Image: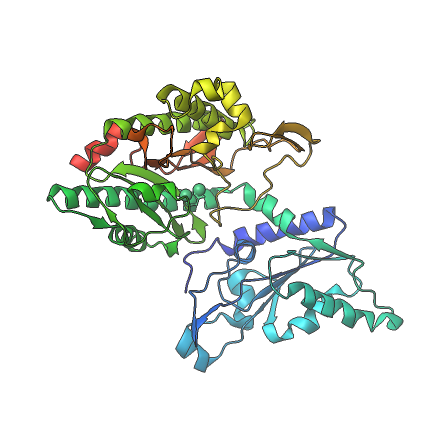
Length: 467
Ligand code: GLY
Ligand code: MN
Ligand code: MN
């Protein structure tokens, strides 16, 4: 499947130049990067094709069976499928090696069948071979094959690279800070997803306004998918969660055939992929457009936690500050509303130290967002020494501190509360699951929430559903 618009050849060339400079800074060598394989679904049907994110970032090329060779001097070589009239009738247009340099801005291009010969040639006497470790089945063996082939030529003065190095950390660091064209695409993706959430809210309101009974989750999911595609998004960025009532307490629930009923909450975690970039939004709303007292109480608490996390998402703050800000608000709220018993767990500091809050909030508050929904990039500061810190499970751990945020990074901010029926837990909260998730671009002074075209305030959600 065509994955939509790609960055311009000039932008991709600039990214390759920056990567080549990194290779040079780290001792030189040659980078070898395949795109993703096609994956059979059954018989002769494949899963919809999706390029490798690193590869597409550097090439803008979305055909399968393609490789990039890049050396530290900046020379880029693409290997791709040859033109083939018969196959193009069945599968669609191929760029082909002849047109690839002009189309994509690479220095040269060859049929993919030439890979083994060409890779061995480029790696002869190179100081290192760089490739993503552990991401592509069979790649290590392929590289070993090239090195073995070079070793047979040692007597004629050919040296295989003395080092194999992981390419992923260099690319992940580059991808972590988004440029303006990437941010533009991510804003558009978030806007489409926000529209889909608003559409789902309206759809539920209409359904229940007519006095109808249950509404299957899959029908709500269909509204999301319709909205994604009709605005040009290529696919959901991950499996959509549409959870009716108690299903919201299953964190990785997928939209199924359970029925949403009046009086219940509906949790939707869904976002589209647009032109290779993900969005990731969660909203929780009352099926029939009106929060009950208990639902509203917990909703306001999660929203307050999110607001605290948003305030902590700014340049100079650490990635994990948002999490601890949310945890503090949630923990205090759990004590105040009786989800946690002060006599048993102590005050808010004790709740945080012991991780007692994990009974109702057991996941992190956000992740990098970009080409992948859980995007690449180190979560810890590379240049700081390990320190003792909470492990988030009630213990302590020694590790590098959380990394400092900088403009251009994109994170999700997604606190939640999930209350399963249990002894000692006030019954009015049973089976309530709430998460609120927005996408935030770190700016020069704070963060920009790019997913707020769907309301998040309880009264605004109710107003939208009344309209
Ligand atoms: N939708 C996946 C996540 O929120 O992390
Ligand atoms: Mn998320
Ligand atoms: Mn999500």
